Amino acid sequence: MSIESDLLADLAGLQNDPLKFVLWAFPWQEPGTELEFEDGPELWQRALLARVRDGLAVRWAIQEAIASGHVIGKSACVSWLILWAISTMEDARGVVTANTETQLKTKTWAELGKWHRLFIAKSFFDLTATALISRDPAHERTWRIDMIPWSERNTEAFAGLHNRGRRVIAVFDEGSAIPDTIYEVTEGAMTDSETQLLWFVFGNPTRNTGRFKELFPGGSFAHRWNSYQVDSRSVRFSDKKKIAQWIEDYGEDSDFIRVRVLGVFPRAGTVQFIPSDLVEQAASRDVEIYLHDPLVLGVDVARFGDDDSVLYPRKGRDGRSLGYLRLRPTNNRQPWLMILAGRIAELVKEWGVDMVFVDAGGIGAGLVDRLIQLNVPCIGIEFGQKADRRLPEKDEQAKYANKRAEIWGWMKEWLKDGAIPSDPHIKAQLVGPEYGFNARDEIQLEKKEDMRKRGLASPDIPDALALTFAYPVMPRLRPGLPGVHSTPAVLHEYNPFALEAL
Image (cartoon, rainbow, N blue to C red; front, side, top):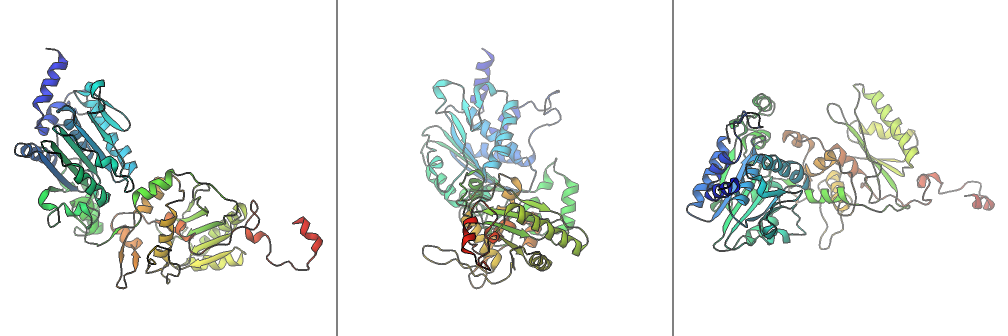
C-alpha cells in the first residue's frame, strides 16, 4: 500500500474519534517542529473531544457550547475540530463564522492555517482565504468547509447546510456576539435525517442575554446542548501572574474576572449598542462627499490618566478622509487647556470647520470658554444633559435617557450610510459600550467607568465622532472655501457694486 492509501485508511478509522485524531494528526513532541515541547491537548480540550467521541457512539447530533476566559487554546481546538470533521468523512460540508470578519480572518482562520500546515494529511486539502476544500476536482464543490462572515441581512449562507447522509459541521467563534437570527437559521438548516450534525459554539461570556447565554444551565436551550465553562487558570500556558494582578485590581467576583478569567457570565443586564457588522460595513464603505455638507468637529476632552483628548472631523457621510487626532493631556490643567484650544483653533482655520461641539463636562467647560474667546464657532455639550433630538422612526420616537445616549443613537443611524477608517481602535470602541433601560424605559448607554471594569478601553474616539451629531449645522453657503462663517450673514456699509467681488 502507498503512503497515501495508508493515510486514507487511518483517517477512515478516526471518523468517530476526534481525540484520537488530534493525537495522531500532528507532530506532538517531535524534535525540530513547532510542537517539540507540546505533548497534546489541554485537559478541557481532551474533555471536549472525548465528549464528542462518546456522543457519536449513541447519536448523530452533537451540540457543544464552550464559555471561557481568555487564552485557553480555543482557536486551536476549533482548528482541530474543523480538520477532523472534513478529513475523516467524504463530502463533509460546513461553515465557520465569528463575531466579526476581522476576528474570523485574523484569529480563527489564521490559526487554522497553522494547524493545516502541521497536519499529516494536509496534501488532501487546500486552504484558501475563505475555504478548506478537497483537492479532488470531482469533490471540490461537495467536500468543503467555508469561512462566512455573518450578516443579519443575508442569512442564506447559513440556511444551505443540508448534506443528507453525510456530515455537516457549523462552528461559531465568539458566539456571544453573534445575533439570535443566525442561530435560528442555522438550527433550521441542520435538520437532515440520517446525517451527522455537529455544531460547536465557543466564546467569552460577555453578555448575560441572548442565544449564547441560553445554551448554558438555566437557559431555554440548555437541555439540547452540552455546555462547558473553562477557567483560564486551569490552562498550562495562561499568564498566571497577569491573572493574579487582575484579581487583585478588580476582585475575584467582579464581572471583569468572571468573563475574562472564570468563563462565567456577567451580572450586568446590558447588550451591545452598536452591532459589529454595522461597524465593519462602515469601515469598508466608500461614500461621496458633497461640497455643501458642513464640516463639523467633535472634541472629547480627556481629564487625566490614560485617556486621550480626541478631535474628530466629519463632513456629511464622510468620517474617514481627515481621520482623527488623539492628544494626551499634560499634568498641569490650565496650560493643557490653552494648548488644546490653540490646536483646535488652528484646525478650524486650516480645515474650514463650520462648528465645533465640545464635551463640556468637567474641565471641558473651560475649553469651551477659551474657544469662544478665540472666536471659534463652538457649542458645549453636557453628556448628562436632557436629550432633545429624537431619532425619526417609522412607528415611534426613540427615547434616550441623556444627551450622550442620544448622540450615540444618531451616530448608530449614520453608520448605516457613513464611512469610518478601517482602524482597529475605533472599531473596538464603537462596539464596546452596552446599554440598558432606566425606570422611564429610556435607552441608557453604559458608563465609561463600567466599561473599564469589564476591561474595555474608554470609547474616546466614538464619543468625539458622536459629538458631531449634537445638533444640525447649516450647510455651507460657499462650498470649496472655509466654512459658512467666512462670509458674514450681514454686510455693514452696504455697497451693491461689491457683490460682484464676492
